[in-house]
Length: 67
Ligand SMILES: [Zn+2]
Image 1 (cartoon, rainbow, N blue to C red):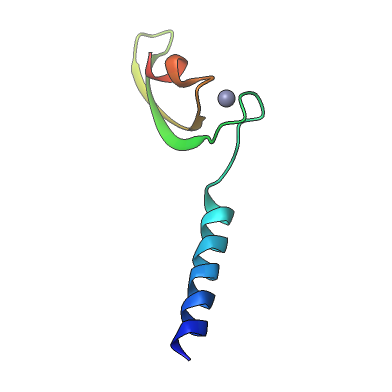
Image 2 (cartoon, rainbow, N blue to C red):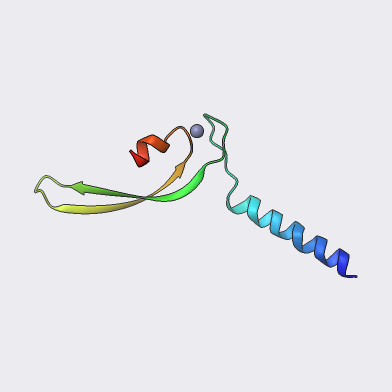
């Protein structure tokens, strides 16, 4: 029964994909893309302090993040 097995596999993949990514922006309704945002921050002493932040990018904040 190769056909049934195949369908089960595809269904499982689809389920996994939905669970992991597929998130929609509440503002623009488009899909948001998870990414890691690197920001260079300096504290009051002038020391360089790199920061990594997880962000979700869509049309609303794309410009803000990529500058
Ligand atoms: Zn948006």
